[in-house]
Length: 146
Image 1 (cartoon, rainbow, N blue to C red):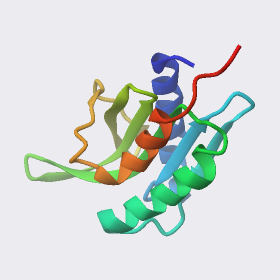
Image 2: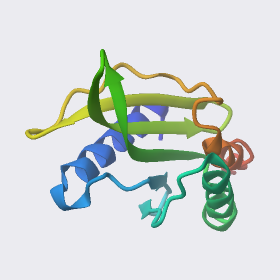
Image 3: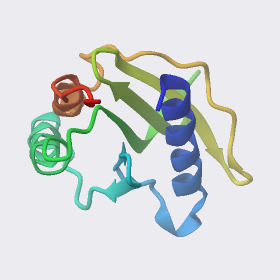
């Protein structure tokens, strides 16, 4: 899977999750594209603090990514952004791959569904420090052999 395919997969998963009206807010979810299937895992009771989130995602990476040598990931969640004093609900989509760093995009959630995603940009590690365990697990994944 290349980065464009990973980005498209993560945006589609984010759109699908945000489109489920009974699932609001969009739950924190990790997407793991693996050779045999793509695993989509909702993180129940996602902590409100960065330290708790970091610990949860470190356990997730150790339990789910490292054993299967996952070289990439996606992370999806809902957030509220301030648009000139007006709160806007958005679905946030982050994806990262081995030695590539993470990219971030977001799209507004409206009554009609998910709007257009903004162009992706590199994720500043200080913006979502709790995602570091996922990126670390992807970075340390071994390259597939012959």
